[in-house]
Structure formats: structure tokens, C-alpha cells
Length: 211
Image 1 (cartoon, rainbow, N blue to C red):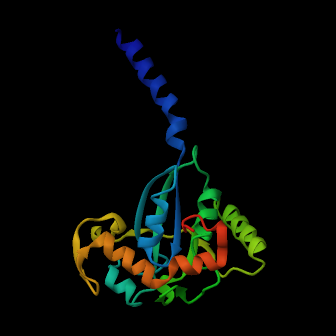
Image 2: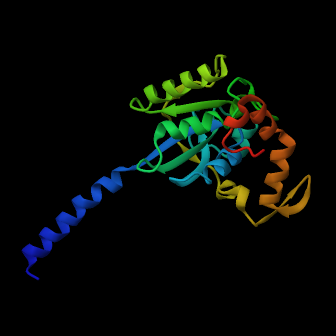
Image 3: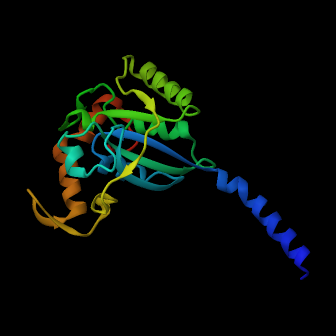
């Protein structure tokens, strides 16, 4: 193949791939315990990656213990990467809002404190979509929602220990004993009452709660 022909073929292949590349988008949300939000969204068709971490505060590169103890002004957050050709940003937010208690300004479920409060961090382009999602949820519930739409913030990824915790076979010492992290997570989620409260608020519209 002549070099000019090869070059033209490569350029054509590059531009053909652009639409697929442009479909990848991210959403940054805070919904209390980031293990729970991560676990929920790993089950969603069109979601390609989920990472947990911190955002919204002034301290660079915070550690989990600092954030969880309330010594920073960061929130626990989840970064959701998705294929917009399969699921839209609005659909991601609709699922998110229906997986939390959007009336609780003091934390989420058994996790109390600002670091566990809810928020949607949005770019200027995302903000009208986020506001519309909140308005629709308020109309459905007939009550004002306290979950704010905040300006997009720097995402600081949490330690690897916390990534995909809900599915980890690694063992850890907990109040339930020396057990797999995935089992510790299940015990925590049930004890915290997350699913029960979400079911009370959203009923059959709760996407991640069975029964």
C-alpha cells in the first residue's frame, strides 16, 4: 500500500471513531456512602466505569479518614462514566435521585454529617439538565428536595481499598468479624436502613430496591 493511501485510511478511521469516542460522558454525584452509589450504578446498562472519591472541599488530595471524620469540607462522591449512546445524563440523574433520601440535609440514612450529604456536581452544560431532573422528582413526590446542584468540582479518587468494595473478595476486620468486604458491605447496607428508607420514599419507583 502506498504511504499516501495508508495515511488517508488512517485519517478516515480516526474520524469514523470520533462519534463513538464523543459518547463517553461522566456524572459526579454525592449520595451518602459512596460504596452504595457505586454498587447501584455498576448494575446499570450503559455505565462503563464507576469510581469513588471526594469532591466539593478546599483540601487537595484528602484521605478517606479525614473526610469520613468531618475534618474536611469534602463530600463522599461517585464518578459515573457512561456511554451516552445507551443512557443519557438525565437518565443517570433520575436513577440517582431515586436511590437516595433527597429530603435529608444532614447526611444519608445512618451516616450523619455534611460529608455524607447529597449533591449533584454539574458542568454549566449539565446544570439545566440537573435542575430539570430535580424539578421532576419534586413534582413526583410533591415536596421540595434539598439535594443541591453545585458547580463541578475536582474529583479526588479514594484509596484503592474503597474501589468496588461491594464486590471485593478481600477480607477485612469489621464489627461483623473477619469477613469478605462484599459481605461486610451487605451487612452495613442492611443495618444502615438505606433500602428500607428509599422504598418508603420512592415506592415502586426505586430502581435499585427489590420487592
